[in-house]
Length: 158
Ligand SMILES: [Zn+2]
Image 1 (cartoon, protein in one colour):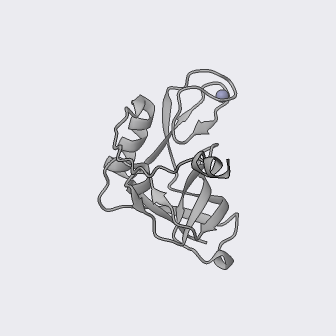
Image 2 (cartoon, protein in one colour):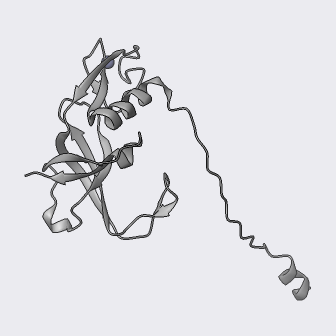
Image 3 (cartoon, protein in one colour):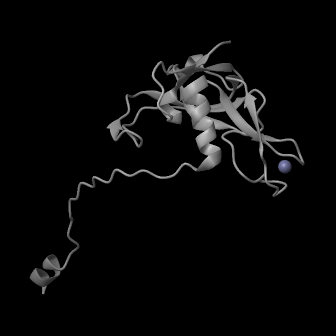
């Protein structure tokens, strides 16, 4: 019986998935990515009822449930709301490569926007970072229509 029990335990299967894929970004997100890529500008969309600006753009206001069609440029500067300095390995999902550590994930409210974005901050010394600091987008020299690479990172400006 003891022998039988050992043989009936769960097995471990190793599988390395290689599943590259593309998906349609949609009209709103495509407009956002195109402005980043072609003009180094950050665009959102404004609600015709409450006036909130969402970045990245979305079709329907989360509060009013109305369709939003007015695209507006927001600032490439904003306020750091929160951050975390990460020291564990992470795979960049857009490239499938390990991300260099440490890195700082930042929650940012861009000037002129009523929503928040997540991106990376170039400072990794948590003693030098505080919520409320002003930050600025640093665009990549070669942009391809990819949010996390066309904006290379954010830098502290104050
Ligand atoms: Zn609204």
